[in-house]
Length: 256
Image 1 (tube, one colour):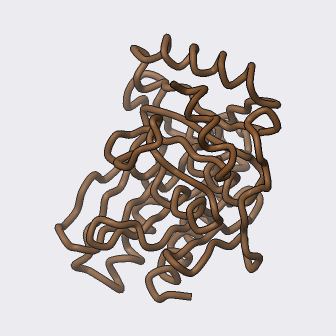
Image 2 (cartoon, helix red, strand yellow):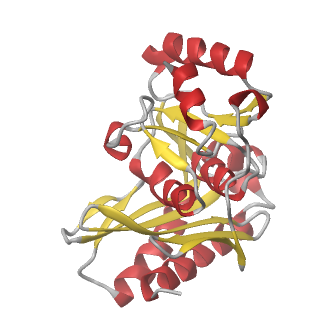
């Protein structure tokens, strides 16, 4: 395992232990709304602080881009962190949330970790070295057509002005796939595409920390990733479409 990936795994597991300790007694959570339908708790902040501490202990000069802390330092190596993707799920005790950590070097995502503390599942990837669920190599499913696909999605709750567009996309994907699921944690959904549990995924209104780690896993597992038109720049645009190689063009056609 690459040394940077090893640090990311250690940090993700530390954050996961903080989340798991808090999960049984949610009555003590201090919940604050950052914006409509977007929440943060003291658990998010504690998990993020733990991740940053572990990273900075090894590499104090590295840049950090984190959901709660914003940007720290400037460096060619940047850690992209979501300490708790799926906070709303966590608040309600719905066990679909994760820790997501990616390492970007000179603008390209090189390593990624998605850790599901509720199920104790660790998804990892390094560019050119494959993607893994725990110690098992991941491959995207063999889905050949969108009509056979189980598709994940997320509502654009941060960009409600795009709801009309989203509902048109949803209608087309529902008509042309075997089913659509909305679980509420984009990073984990992307890891599920990499592992073959989902065949495709799309969402808009995302941030880099929602996508970076999971998208690398899909690419390393043999899948395709792009913006909603299939082009590059999805990380900056905040929108993503991902699928098996055969289903990807059909997903893009439905989203168009």
